[in-house]
Amino acid sequence: MNSPQFTLDILTSPEPSLDNFILPALIDSPQVSILEVLKQIQAFLKVHQPVSVDWNLIYVWGPSGSGKSHLLMAMQKFYAALGLPHLYLTSQHHDWQFADIQTGPNCSAYFIDDVESLNTSEVNQLFKLLVDHKNVPEKLIFVSGSKSSHHLKIRDDISSRLSSGLNFELSFLTDAEKIFALQELIKARGLNIAPDLPHWLLTHFYRDLPSLISIIEAVDHYSLQTKRPITLPLLKELLHSTT
Image (cartoon, rainbow, N blue to C red; front, side):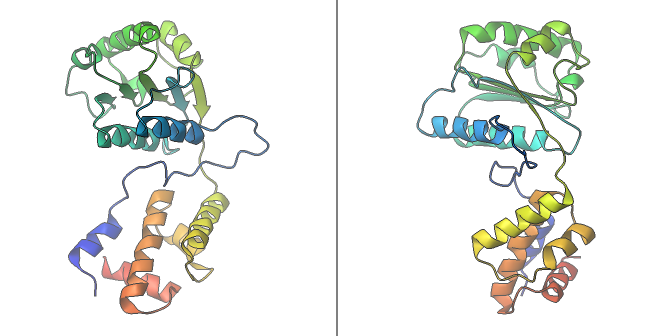
């Protein structure tokens, strides 16, 4: 019933996108969310309009696992899909020259994940990029860090410039928010799923929301293949077949 590719898919985390990212609840918050800003940027780019100068410098911060890298990768993949030249720098990928790409006239966006991990040369290039940014307002600079721009362990002239843009803090989703997000997905798909399934997944399997969503989608496909209702025993059978 299960093909090798189906088994591989369920064990692989889904590609980062804005659609599979859920923000924690913002109770009575009048501020626009980072998700709304990024979706609006994507909407402009789809119709070949430049990024608004009000949104062209974004700094997002929060603890490891709160979703910063997810958002940067989602935007990077979006730019790549549109064929827009961009720079993507993470603490795991320092195998090319920042300066060579930064000076490229056609580069339309800069995604810099974990800014505190930059080496001295890269910090210098980032400062130059931020200074020159006033002359190229249509280009997006999207940076992440572990602390607010005022408390970053980085040069003051960089932290002050980051603070002048849009700043957003990310936090972890609570278990209740994850279950709610899964229930909303189930409702949106019109799925008839046993009510105990989301809670069981959260306590016995992956805890990050994109992986949980991927499993819900997989058990839906498995239910269609086997012509059986989506119950906890069916989910356990599917998971057992992938181990």
